[in-house]
Amino acid sequence: RKIMDEFKVDLRFPQSGAADPNLVTVTGRPELVDEAIDHLLNLEEEYMADVVENEAKMAYMRPSGGSAAAMDEQRGPSKGFVVREAPWATGSEKAPDMSSSEDFPSFGAPVATKASPWGPKRF
Image 1: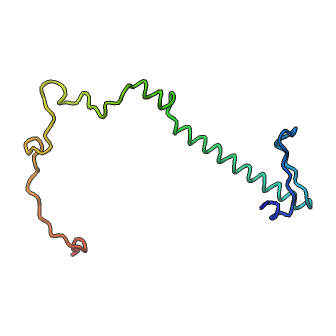
Image 2: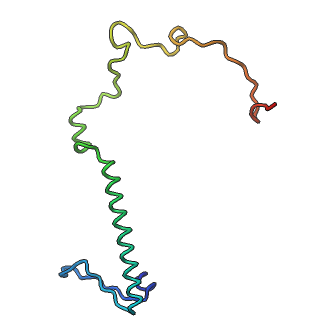
Image 3: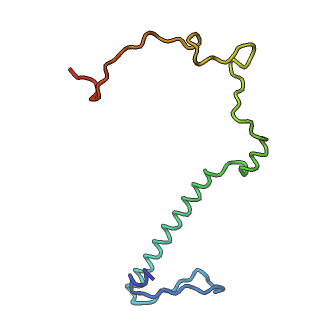
């Protein structure tokens, strides 16, 4: 209706079961009909470009090699996060203690800086 009001034309769409379901009839003054047809073709082109772009995006969203359910079945039940082949996992070594000053020594005494809410002083 918006296009019909804007271009002062009459648009007729095919009924279901028509011989050519893509045939749209535009009637009105010839110059207005041409403008309406150009507008409709531009809308079609933009719509088809969006469809192609969305299909390309969806190709990146789908997991390759099948559905997500099939991938879960191949992997088996989830055990959470598991670390394999870590240096401490082989032999008798143990994981480093994050709170240990022996495993994580400091690199000297911390430097006390005088913080200002306005940032560092410029000389």
